[in-house]
Length: 347
Image 1 (cartoon, helix red, strand yellow):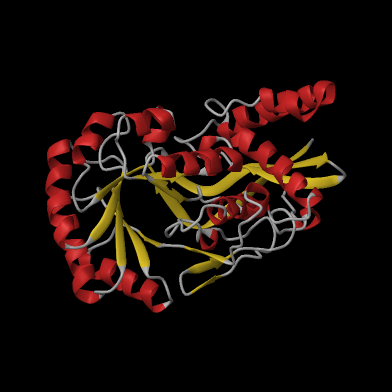
Image 2: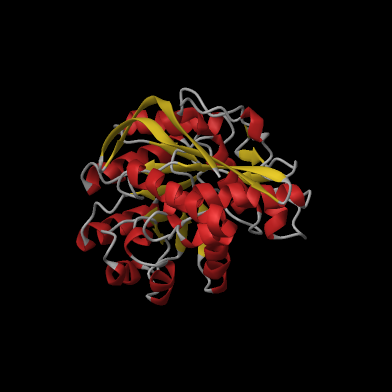
């Protein structure tokens, strides 16, 4: 196992609950397996995964284990619940090498019978006043997106309702989702859901704090669905599904410990009547491609949050996946669809 650090500046600062991020920092992982070199990416995100220092330390420990006992020993050192980004980096490199050795794109390594040329993706619109929000959605629709996710929760519920109403008046025929990032109380969420139903919002992502599974379960059953994201940090997906707390699971491979874990959880959710949506954590191209292949391996998946490459001012390598008319092309080459020699982190 070889690792190399990188830092990718963002095209504009990203505000999160843990602070403002100006660059995405992580580790590129390369691993030789079955005669092929696979490439992975470990890009921790504050508040969602382990720290960068813990990620690098976990990969160093896994590399020592690999020298002693091979890739199985290395994987056992990388627990998804404590160092998910590190596990993602190594697991992706291992899967990339496996798929290359089998001469299939990664999504077909998950499901040999699948054929998928593209995956629908949504545009994301940040917080702004009603006119600016409506204009941003109109631009997204004009560029081919038919699904937009709007950030809500930074303002009052009444102001967010006004923003969504302005969007509907400006752009009628577009699927709308909202992401509250756990900002609402139960009463606020109930009021927002009632108004959002009239505005045709498909679902609200994380309306309540992450640990309130019972509150999320109570919100289900109406025309506006409940999607859980941050809750998967505090609770295992099985606990979320057992609590009947979600209509949709938002699966971030970097957060759940790798593409294989994300694919397994997506299929498990489907078996329980819960729809999976795959998203990135504003990653480099290697991790974005891994998430894209996970989505491509899930039949009839809805719009996913994968079109995030434009948030980076520069990337680890050229991106073979393009977005046209709200669809992201799925590389059909072996593995991730990117040449590991073209991945150039800045040490």
